[in-house]
Length: 290
Image (cartoon, rainbow, N blue to C red):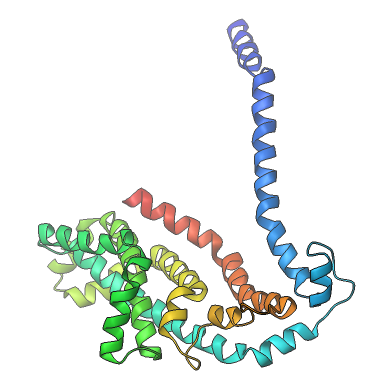
């Protein structure tokens, strides 16, 4: 009893002024980070209901009224409906193809023979993560122009597929490496083909990493601006490019631009709020299994 009491007092004694000071500092940093993260969204929200005159007078002040017409005008004159449909098509097709090809490639890298060849090919895909998109803009533009893919939905979808595939393959292959090889061996002994085993065994077990890769690809494609700005035209533009059209060198329509930004931001906020736990779990699971 005496030893237990002494140990308890020693533990309690370690919580001195330094312990509580570090705790206060940690909470202060978390609160500051939260404010820096949330305030821009709050500012964007109420600024979308302001007129241009109100914004010029005081960019940080609350709106004197609710200029709801900003949303209607932005949607109509900015052709945001067309651009939102384009972004939805690009995102849906890109995510589907990325998941399909990434899971197939990850299975080949992780569970099939020829490990040395797989390691070499995986290294080439890894370069896709390291190489900046800006460094390939000009050669990629020349290639797409020669193939007649500029200002086509098919062309920009191929670009989004190529840009987002390496990360999905890396996440998927690291996750599949942690799956027991005995499952594959047992399936082969039972006479299952690679296709049957991939569809019936591997894919159901890879649901967490597929959700993670799908959400990351969705966020990347929906928010992408530069590639859509360069490789699309008036009828194939993405939503971020359409939002940018409200700003030019001579004039910026702040109310319409902020309303357009809110229109483009709301779907992403909804998706992230619904699946942020899935993202965290999938990334952690991939890290642990890798």
